[in-house]
Image 1 (cartoon, helix red, strand yellow):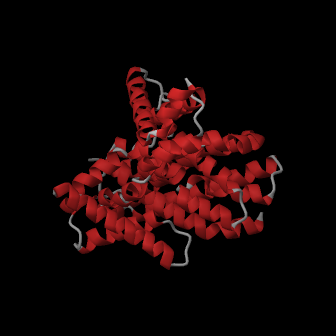
Image 2 (cartoon, each protein chain N blue to C red):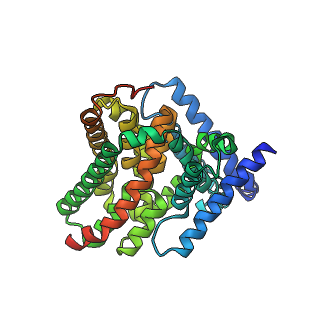
Image 3 (cartoon, each protein chain N blue to C red):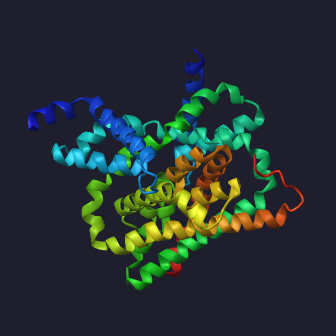
Length: 123
Length: 233
């Protein structure tokens, strides 16, 4: 029953997220509303961590495989993609490397600037 | 051959089974080969495309069964709130750095897309198509559509970006000497959305939590600024 209850809470919050997506006029997906709702629930104590922890760990653990179906879909979009393949690959591959590097550098730099006094960052 | 293929592809378990088996093979290769491109997700996707082509199975037939895996993506994304909640204090301590990092990533991404579009003399609709490539699929699709982009190219680019982030994360973070776990997570989530986040989760709780946060924040900010960016292109 423990898993049923945990899965139930997560699915109900997912459903509420989808509902918000329909009700609100922004182009924000239900999963992001759901994430916000879950965080809100945890912060207010409405949902306790132990009430969702096991199933949450399971879902986060299997996350990489959840992307397989949509990524295999590249075999379909290949036709339209190859016409602009060079710019696409430049933006996606080189771009991702640069964006990741710069984002990390900036974050690390500002952390170094703002929290010189507290060290215990690494756990 | 084709009759076996037909029987197999008609079972809803076929797509899930082949996906899991190929991912398993990817994990084994990943453990044996110490090479960053030997990424389980990348290997599994290539293997599945090969198998589908060899057996002459259409993507639609595969997706019929595989959609049951995708179904779990929304609840899994919702669960990103759990590690984030557990690291809330860490987030509060570093909120300025986190926001500065995400903003710098979004700006860098936009400048790169702009540069590539100018160099290759691509039109406004391709610019709008490419801009949301770093954010999570559901937000990116909507943004591209609204701005007159080509939605299926956006979706493909989001997938390529995600798999790139997943593959190169270790290498890039080492190359740029990014050691702080908060910075690692923000870098991965901002550059390669939820697909990168699944890699960040493997690195550690803090990396995963921050990456998940970055996906949500970067997605929202990007949606807000895209109309403005397309307007000035």
